[in-house]
Length: 332
Image (cartoon, rainbow, N blue to C red; front, side, top):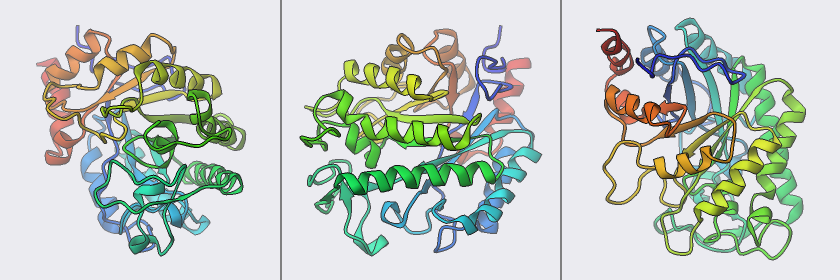
């Protein structure tokens, strides 16, 4: 029995198979973050044939202060919706479903890129970024403004014809900074124990759900910092359960301050101890990405119930026929 080509039916997305293309930054947008022909051509090439069940579009900033890098995609303005529609239409035409990942870089941003002093939960330099600037600690009014920015971005994603939205809370960006005890030293309701450190994310999830209704919400979760004093698996499990209760439909498990790799780990699906632990406490599907380069590796992850969906990133980035060859190998 092949697992990779089995449909996923216990989800609002009703995916036709278990293969996901995870978000990978292309730096192909215009200076204002709008869609270019290069962006359209890239996703057209990657999705031809419809072998991918789901394509998660690269992280896109919800406000200028949250812009991580030059030529990053934007969902920060209403005028961008029309060009974003072209992207969702190309992917749908090719036979895949697609969601957009929305993000605020927080202390991973730089004034050189944004023109704005970087922001964070606490005035602590970002351990995931070399030579990071010390951010300004957000006040509660600014936190509410960020919640509203995520909500407005999700509404734009829905208007642009996507099948869902993914909230980015991994890889050392703002929501991950709130989650991690390494970067969140707040003493108010948005800090302290895990319930305080996830408060902004729960508020964002609920705000998005209120605004978009019956629309799929995913959350990419940095489940481990892999650094001393960082996020524990016990706290990650509590956070995952709370995210499901708040309205998340699918959890996408990755790294936190260690970004998307674990130092010295070479085995496929190296975040699997965390995806398996989280699967114990949630009933929603879980995506696992990281180091998966062969179809049989994806099969083994699904067979061993380490995840419900498998994300294959760099292999697909290098070879646009990877998904086609993987799916055909299952039937040969």
